[in-house]
Length: 578
Image (tube, rainbow, N blue to C red; front, side):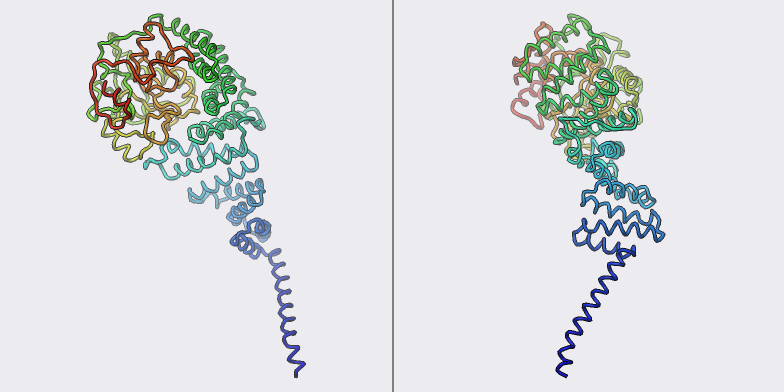
């Protein structure tokens, strides 16, 4: 009996160990031969935070399930889950293959839109992590198009939630692009044919334009645009307009990043390309002359900058006449088409233009019903001329017609006049962003501003139509009101490539020829000073302080005090002159 008592614990321990070995063997065999067991093991390891160990079990579960008769649709959710585990193992190509299989199966096609966007974003990121820039760009470009106006109005309640989600995912992918594109060394694009390469370059250009508009997105934008530029230059040549177009997007980024030599090279190539395309005496060259001269000034190469400015003035003198500018001190500037409007130059709530007309009457294509107030503009006809031919809406129609033919894009007026009350309602709905300004500081209240649609959404910097507007708008009396880097509006994003303001042909020409680049409000505030100097043939000199921008604009005629809503001490003094 004592011996039996001693053997009992040993017998039980042995039996337990035997059972454990048998169970372990059975489990090991099960997870290798049974799809459900392998899937359970995969999920258990994922739940305890071991996705790398889980991956092999997930792959085995997929293989076994298919052998047991499961369809691709049946295993699609498992493939999507295993893709995350493969990403943890840095097997990015495999992760992308699994996600693509899952999304193209019926399961993926029937996902709720928000979940599908989530998986498509994971797929694009897997491609980026694998170094496949072209496939990732194709997905994110589709996000950009589906986002539509959410790119410009992410907080607007009228924008669909899925459009906002597309824009949000795209914005968050900037860091992922930085792992693949190097703004200093553009990578060559691959493709079966030159057409495939050019299609990828267009996608990168669109994405670069998106990131270039966002604070902190400069490096991702520069890498994407530089890669697109080199591809277009290699295949289409430096003179092609698609290549030149990228100069207007990439050059300012290089300048902002301090890469002045690179910006200089771009602007020189664009200038000579346009010189060959449009002729050495075309005023259209003025945009590229001004950009290049600005870079020279930043490099303190003032002699070269001055030579460019003088060349531009010769072009303007030959094209528009020696007496192209004049000063009329007797005009009431409260009715002027060239008064500044911003948070420092607000309008009274009671201000309303007296010469509003329907834009459609002058053949301006409209994005909304032509009889509503928002599709109206000021007539702003030239005095002493044919009011039917020489006015704001007629010139906008001409500009749109020109750029439609050059870009082959659909261009229309999205928004014209808005009353103080309408602006207040829009701002309350949209929030404090630059895209919808507070009432009283919107140029739309003047009836002189035109928001432009391209292909059914706000004009973007990457649109061909934008290049056309940048080059030609001054000929028709328009300027870009809110250029990159402005502080005219109180919102987060003040750059509005879709917002064009009519100031009259003479003022727009003067701004291009002698005004400070990308400082339209400062120019308009000091316009009498610029007019007086230009009329006497005295233009700013490269490298010297511009007395017209000295914070003390020339005294404005017919003072009319206004009560500013937001002001600095200098701004208040200037406003009281209105």
